[in-house]
Image 1: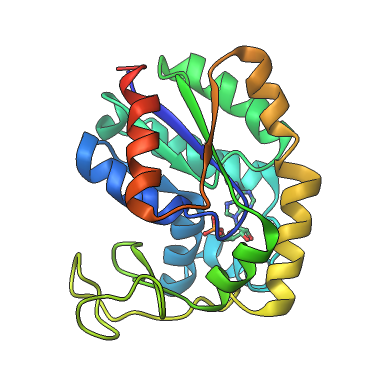
Image 2 (image 1 turned 90 degrees about the vertical axis):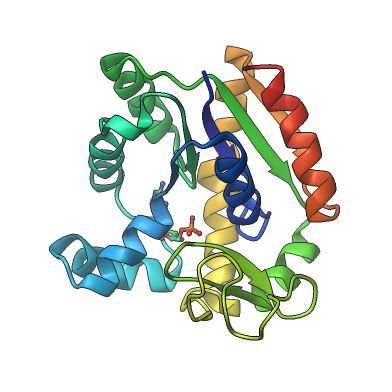
Length: 217
Ligand code: AMP
């Protein structure tokens, strides 16, 4: 069963690769960042709570995030696999996910960690454009859409994320090294962890991820 966690620093290419993987393996893409952004744009109570936190690059509290993920993983479309993108981001979230997975009978089966040097991340984030409708990512120089400003996948209008600025990025990277990177050790100890070089072209990275996933299926 492909119950996947996608790890990696902001700008590692998680969103880009996640889109390819869910299209190929027909599993739902569960991006906690996308879920928060959707709540923000709809003005829900959760969105109101999360907006300032997200725009400054800080992490939403674990309880709030875990409750949202639990509801999502319980949905019928996760019965045959799922891809978690951007969750877990802290050790308590990883521990809670373990419980949720057991409770739902949907435990994580594979962890893919995309490794990219910091200096590459900075330029990827600065030029990133995203589709708020389907979550696809582009880059103004290295991964242009066919028609400028328009999503290839769904026709949505591309935007720049509010937290893709130098100051929020610094905060996100700091959070990543302090809170998220240590989770790799947690999964390495469980033996279902694979690091993939994310500093290559998107095609090659996708091929390498597929090789890891095919070992699981
Ligand atoms: P992302 O789209 O994954 O880069 O997430 C954007 C922002 O949403 C993050 O910088 C956090 O503020 C928030 N966020 C997303 N996932 C989580 C999580 N697992 N825990 C806490 N905050 C999160």
